[in-house]
Length: 150
Image (cartoon, rainbow, N blue to C red):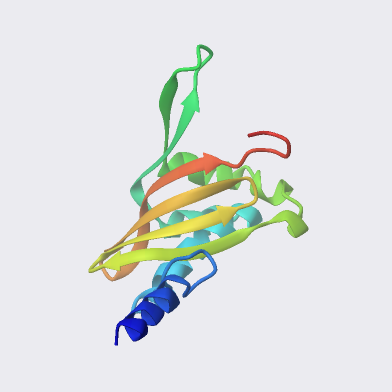
């Protein structure tokens, strides 16, 4: 019995390539769609699609260093992100370099957490089911190091 429990635990942990358990609940498709709309609209420059997947009060944040090496929290709201999308910065990424991997990390009731791996950064998304639709309400992101950086 103990060997069976250990084997089941190992299979559960190894359920996906990123070491997490793949969520396949009733809202999985809708959560994944919101996250993929976020990724794909960036690369296509589709500001309307970006706006539709975001809650209007979105908070997108990143930790940056100032000129003295101190950490600071930079913030971006939904409309700024929509404007950056409209400015078509995303389509400048060559198609063969456009990475858009989405993993649902956790779901509980009307809230979810997902990870989006993009070409130059990783986004951790918090989503909420609002009036029956999944919207991204928070994003905490980090820039990937360039080749040769640590």
